[in-house]
Length: 276
Ligand SMILES: C[S@@+](CC[C@H](N)C(=O)[O-])C[C@H]1O[C@@H](n2cnc3c(N)ncnc32)[C@H](O)[C@@H]1O
Image 1 (cartoon, protein in one colour):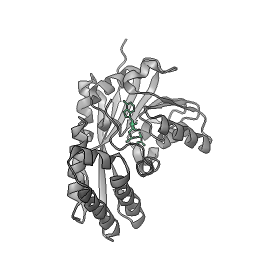
Image 2 (cartoon, rainbow, N blue to C red):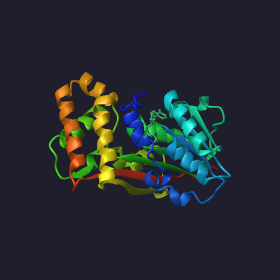
Image 3 (tube, rainbow, N blue to C red):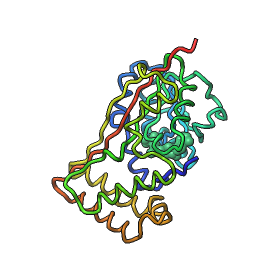
Image 4 (cartoon, helix red, strand yellow):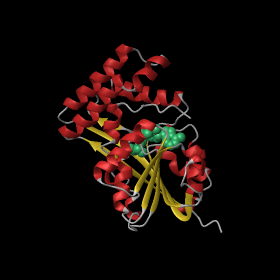
């Protein structure tokens, strides 16, 4: 399994815990009209999207997995704090789902993964497993960033260096930080017919002072406090000095009154064919 590049430091979880179905699964929203859906959330992280999904299917059920025991604990607490009970969080890996009690082949109406395939060395293999778990007639919903398409204004010294460094570090561990643009191709390689795939684009924009403080602030912290620092230094791709310049770039971006940062995601809905 690829090491999860960001790790689960508080500065990383600040981004994950902000996520909701509305801001992170717009492609899935039209399919959540049936309150009895059974959903599998793959790579759920601290589970804010998962718990939101569960609250939208009150007569259904969400099963969520993540290899990190630490985030699964947080996810269980988040659901409990929200009073959401139709959800189960288990430590688990998409490549070993057969080891999970209660997960059977062809069982889930929706198999969902948000920003997970970009962290896997074998995204096609993961998509094949997700296809096996989905019910015939069900859907697979996947959304991932395309780092190469991230954009910002104004140009701030150090931001390009941040982006180049992040992309190089992800590629170094054989992951594709730009996978968002080819999720439909990954699904096709995993055996989904092109005619059964809806491909679209979803974005996050950080521009108001509050949005910039949130996004730029968490990246400034991540750069020196999360696993990002260790991988950058260990790879030899950056020095401590380079990392401090990147932090300054994020702080400068936060202060820009006309600052604007766009995160571009590719997103797909793959309709699973009846196998009979
Ligand atoms: C960027 S986080 C996304 C978390 C959550 N889906 C969200 O958007 O808030 C990626 C998550 O994928 C998990 N992950 C990594 N490899 C995995 C695997 N083989 N199977 C399932 N999850 C995995 C990581 O532990 C991490 O929590």
